[in-house]
Length: 381
Ligand code: UD1
Ligand code: UDP
Image (tube, rainbow, N blue to C red; front, side, top):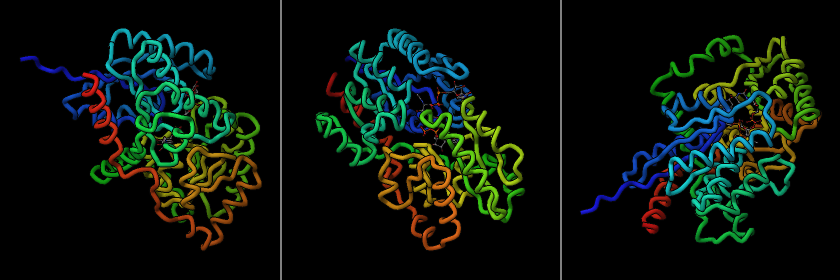
């Protein structure tokens, strides 16, 4: 009698959001006897990645430790391509999983394609329609879409975008977004262990009675003028004494220099280090409004019924806007301030946005994805 060995699945990621969206997939892979996950992190991010690995209890099998301060896209991509290729040659997986649209995901898919390994793409089909926004992510995900074997689209809108690009519909599956799986998991963890979010207690006390606004910003296309305008808008918002802004600052030196320069020392603005996932989930809970250019936050905030003002001109996540919980406000200082003040001062405008709406998934996306991969492996055997 021959004993079937589980198929080796190489899971590749490198940044915070990929880690958040893949830890539930890794857990589901581990639970499936037909599959054996091997985890490779590029560590395109270091501290922010490690925060997620720690809370999720993941010890990578391979860690390329690639992050350089202020890294360039070409230098990073070159190192990723050779580094990830070498790991594939060692691991010799049956399939490779990448998530989203980062440099790590794009280079991982390309290195796999060069080895004729099938690539499964989690969070496939997001399109803003503008290759400069977000930059370079819109192109990264299009590149991955041309090579992927299975495309796991979070929504029907994302699946339709792939159909329009002539991807075989039989290879496209609407699974929901695994970020909702992650959010459910972390919410349950916090409920079971409230000490996980104790790190925000001092700020909660300091800002008691204030209306909390959560802020994040890191997009490369906003470096320079866009970030400066965002900083000026935050300064003007902070001139109100009924609000407090909690702003975990991305460690990219291009972001940090602008925000530290413009916002340090304001009584009601807390510039804090990146929060680990439980603390960020807590901030989402505390905040009356989120002001962000993040992709993931655009998915999480609607799920929690928190209005989100998106500091971008276009979005690849139109579902939140369609549902009314997200609004595009760009990076124009006046527009950001005006839209935010409207939400603060016009109860009806706020209530119209503050409805829990979850177009991004039901928390079962990882299970669906893993079942589809296992079926695919079964057909190949
Ligand atoms: C990357 C992704 C972006 C994603 C974002 C999530 C690309 C091209 N960009 O952008 O799609 O939305 O991650 O946050 O893949 N740094 C640290 N510590 C960290 C992480 C970053 O110090 O833990 C600093 C380093 O100086 C690093 C810089 O931030 O060089 C930029 O990191 P990088 O991954 O290149 O770009 P992000 O802007 O984070
Ligand atoms: N996040 C976090 N700590 C923070 C800021 C964000 O854990 O201080 C989480 C957030 O909940 C979301 C993800 O990081 O799941 C979004 O990452 P980011 O904004 O860096 O990247 P993007 O989603 O824009 O690619």
